[in-house]
Image 1: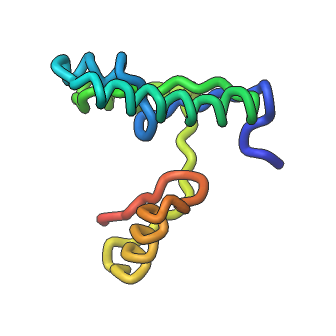
Image 2 (image 1 turned 120 degrees about the vertical axis):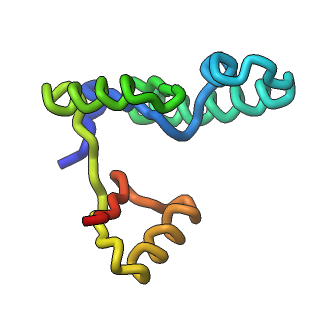
Length: 119
């Protein structure tokens, strides 16, 4: 069963591709050439998601704050936001953590977030 059905899902990304408009809210004096690169990257990424996969895409770029984390937590508790966990690793398993890092840094991280348990 697909994770998101064509025309029936939305991807909200707090990481990855973002356009210069979102970045400018955090870094007001962004150089023109960086704006161009960001917009080109954003166009390519959103084209693949919106037009090829038929999904909605909206990047979210924000400074991490306590209030923002509390909002995300409430959305999760209310069922409005469903985080996808791909792997859960123990902090003691350094070999698995290194392997997961290498996989993520190669751009082949798979579906979902990697969670490292620190308890």
